[in-house]
Length: 193
Length: 180
Image (cartoon, rainbow over all chains, first blue to last red; front, top):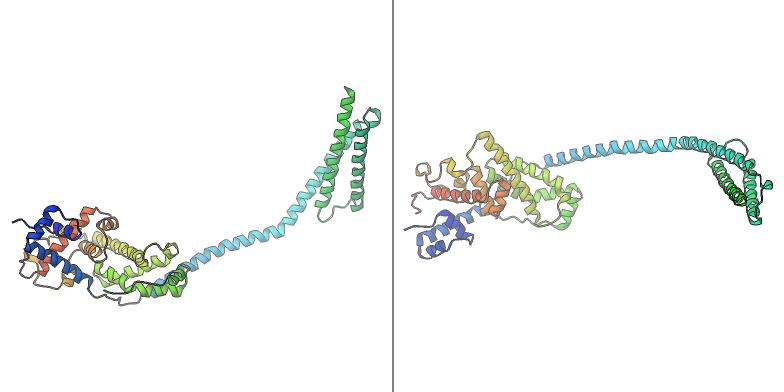
């Protein structure tokens, strides 16, 4: 008589046995005993007493964890140091860089003003025909330029510790002069047509 | 082996935040089941202790990434089983131990079956691979698919290892060898 193999018995235990194995098991006391022995072995394995480690390994795990944390902090520490140095550099050197940049910008806007003065001189308003509204607009722009010139005179020729304020005034002057140029040139061109 | 493997959520949360006391509490809660699992798979107490240490080094490092899905013991056990199986592979490479019971020559060889012995000793006489399959499947409840994945082998390898291991156990436990 053919009996169930161990594979058959394990499959039956897992509820996956073949139809033949299931039918055979119903009529075979030897195979039923095998299945029972299988269950008992597994139950005994599960019931084996738990063993405890002879040595406490936590101190080693803890030491490794703390060493890892120190390494990580060290890495962060270096990064923090580098970041702090960068911030300190900005605090110390930024005013110097900023002042240098502002001085260069001041020189540039002064040159722009000088160029615009020359160009405006070529458009003598008295020699050209212009409308009343254009003349009024030009007069208003000239008044605002005069106000800025007054402010520049008040501040004096010496560049202050922070030349940014001077740069701003000169930039406003350039802007007004461009508008004045636009008024004079466009009207002159129009009249010239 | 009946040990409570349930730990309070608050303890897990503290451990995830790196609290050393909470991490130690987790170690104390799971050191015995981890060691027991490793010892059953590896047989050597020294190897089992090393696996215990490696497992918890991994646990304390990875617990911030533990998402709380499933039982914590399931997560720790997976790490422990993986570490133990890695050690088995290393041992096999060193000792060139055969991977299965058939290759070990134990299967069906009545002459090498010792006189009646208890199950624990019989289990210890299985090869490391067979012990691992039997323990993971029959005691820890892993499926053959999970074992195959852990061992980097096929499902049929796991199934045949289990069958051969049980045949060997039966032979060793049956003094008269008259099981069938």
